Length: 138
Image (cartoon, rainbow, N blue to C red; front, side, top):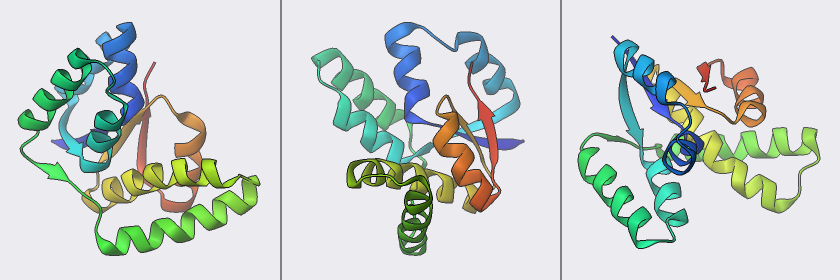
């Protein structure tokens, strides 16, 4: 069976707006879902309410196998952020935000996993450079 990593936006849109229910059900049948340490960190950083913090803590505990970027991935992410950021003429804030997407993409590529995201623009730019599998959540 194939592996998939859910991007941060998929969790947030599902939890806060109830989106992607059917997509997530189909993904569970087609993929083994793995958790990115970067995504878990982004979720924790953004959890402002007690309920959100509880939900993220439960996800973290359930995610006993957490995929994390290697030192080589961090090194490569710096190159990708520079190249793509220069091509897109991004400011420092966008580059900083994009670094996490690059780390998620590099981790997925390392494991041969598909990234599931609603963030088409950033991950299409990364896919053009890295050639990983991408599933756009709708």
